[in-house]
Length: 319
Image (cartoon, rainbow, N blue to C red; front, top):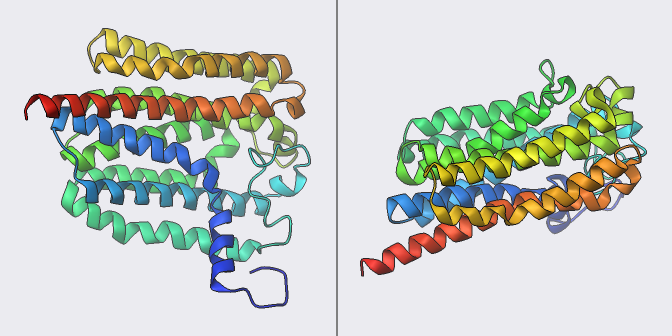
């Protein structure tokens, strides 16, 4: 796969395949899994560790496969080659195809291997967790494919943010379901706020890529709405995410400790201000993108940590 004529060792091959998955972005999937598992611990009184580990692995492989598939299709449609204003490593893909490090063909094969490997593994986990997981797993695989691949190409139709929000909402629901074998309104509510913040990541990442995307016919929301419209939508999604969490606590849908998830609000607001100021000059958006990613991760991890702490307190109470 490398362009060098010297044969690569298995360690070099493994490292290259790891780079192709864009591993830095997988932390948000870990946070979503931990949130669902922590909620299950609060209401279910315990955690099946083996099932939790399997959940995290399958969710991360799904995310990794979707990332690799996205690079494959953005190479085929010319978006990444045309992108001379991306803010690596945040936008513009892994750039390994464009740098000649890997081939387009091998990228497609790696994406297919990752996503197809999920089918037997997901069926195995669903046989132990319940048939509801089959529905979530099938939806996750469908979104991973439909986001980038023709004929749907959701990312090119302004539906990428919606697809991503649905996918990460499903991760939280699925992680909870694996533990408790049933769906939960509370887990759905917690997952909704995190899903909106994940959608914000995709939305702001689309701004530096908008010019290249428009050139190859990708009509992302950043392309459709323009700088000001994108900034307004971003602010609305960020406020809705945190407002929804506060309302969920107020309506007693989720435990009061979930208010610690509001720790991410200052980061989201700071990113929204920076996006409003610099949306027309994408080269200056690197701090805003970093804040957006940090906000989503902090939101999920703060919720997971406080719910896990609550579960620990409840366990001690019954000792």
